[in-house]
Length: 541
Image 1 (cartoon, helix red, strand yellow):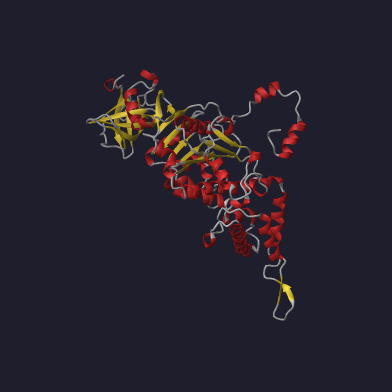
Image 2: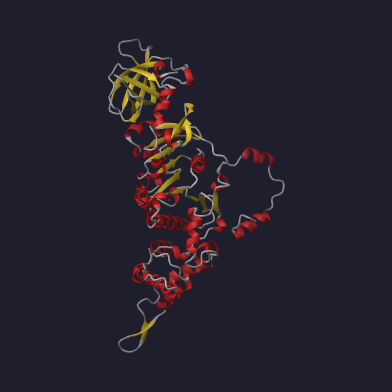
């Protein structure tokens, strides 16, 4: 069907700054060519004005009594959100070039016109879904804006967020042979989705050694700020960490000297640093009368040392205090190559955080985020080495500023969202509770993949974040199908209801099939094996 064959469906009754009200004359109960129902929410409408076609999306439809007529005769009114303009030269631009007047004709958008709308980014040849009401039309995305300007993928549990992200990333690695993607996988879901192209860092193989921690990360994990001696601990720990790193610098002749900082990624023996703390904690000094008395730091670190010794002996913290692989300065090269897909033959690194103690997840997220940021900050080839960070269940470790937890993680991730695009670092944030994510993080996302959201607070929050012209579409969020999303932002031609491609293979995120499992069951459960895996925290047994 050509543009000239557009089907007239009504006329404009009223025009405002961002929307128009259209009286529908077509039968809304009978589908038009292509299966469209006139005025269906999410469908596209063209309003003619001179030689321009104003493209809009139906946000809702209602029946209204017509003044002066019997109340039985009612108007069918569609609220059309004005999105962009089809110009006389056949190109599409965002924004309304010329507002239509009341009385202008409204038409269904043809397949050819819809193709024109999305043709602007066709040269990227990158898509991960189709227009929901016309599955033949692919939704092409501006790759630079999409991955470089940060993405929020939001939706309630069970709406298909993990499959959506897996589908997006699979499309990326199929299209681009030199991707560098890091997934922080909180529940161990994504390994199954990338059997060939990913380096899977399994839960019991994760290693982020203590010497990689910055000063803030070290404090976040080990200092209780509610203790009366916390301020003294912080001051002294800074000196102890600098001394420990400086000792390695001197011993290995690294030549850092005065340029060495407390955050420098320099290997040091944890026992050497603790030995200094223990000495200060029991130090006795001579007073002016020549008698021995307690030093200024005597007992300040009593509780700190108890907590730290507990972590050192806890096998759950072996990934940090007793690593097998990253045990000297030269191993930093291997760590970066492993996590950033450099020379590994892989294009994505999946870090399974499901085995990390919950109280340490924030520090791990902080370390990985900061190391990635610092790498590209100092990378002279960063323009040819963009990195994508993927934060699964981001609300769990990047909370709002009012939340006193995970300070280091929030600071590191916020730095990526505010400054990352300048250094070639983009991010995807996945959450079922966008209202609980750091305000700074979510406000820096220029693209949204908004899936089914049933919580009113989260709906309102997302509505406030998206541009005014698109906020009227948020009413669709509770009724979106599984695997369907509203795609919004500067990476797509216009806000669009998209049916996301199903990933192959899928991540291990599906709900457990209770019906099948309880019908067939397990005749003999190897409980001993479960206990062994549980005790050793190993999944390969």
